[in-house]
Length: 219
Image 1: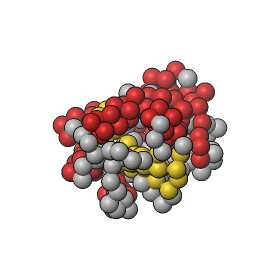
Image 2 (image 1 turned 90 degrees about the horizontal axis):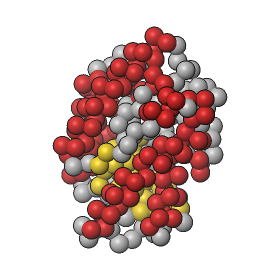
Image 3 (image 1 turned 30 degrees about the vertical axis):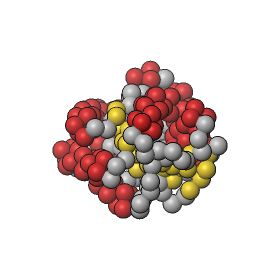
Image 4 (image 1 turned 90 degrees about the vertical axis):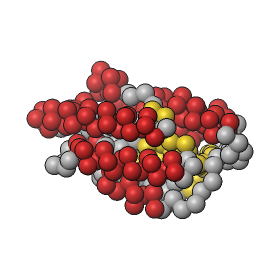
């Protein structure tokens, strides 16, 4: 079985944040928790690039290659809300990427676009505009995910609004290690449900993984 994380939040990949330890990132936390819960080895492959938008999803997916027994976790959109790009176009990029993953036989877990409006590191006008755009993109992502048979994970948006000082890093924009842990707590139940569905389909009997330039076994 494989777990794929094509992308993550605001200007930083949840699996490759430059200023926190690898084991504290979202992908590593999910892989470790999945291995502990299922008793199976988990192979974590990292695809994201810092600053990427939904337009980069297809290039990221091109790097996956053919991997069997894979589950994809898709967490993207904040960067699209912070630049003058069409939210409708961003939603279409997202939908085509999820459709491509599903057509390849992968289970897909989606965490809708996080809300950068909760990040005090941005000036107020930017937060207000980005928050409106993020809510719209998140709704469009959720609709597309449901239509394509992907599973939708719970959002941590309320936690980040109430506990910003704890869950955001020193730049007051990107998640702290505790923030990534909070995201992982929200995603894990849905990831486990996707794993169960994958096993029930008779396709998953071996290890689990997440795509990218680095391949690491988590036990």
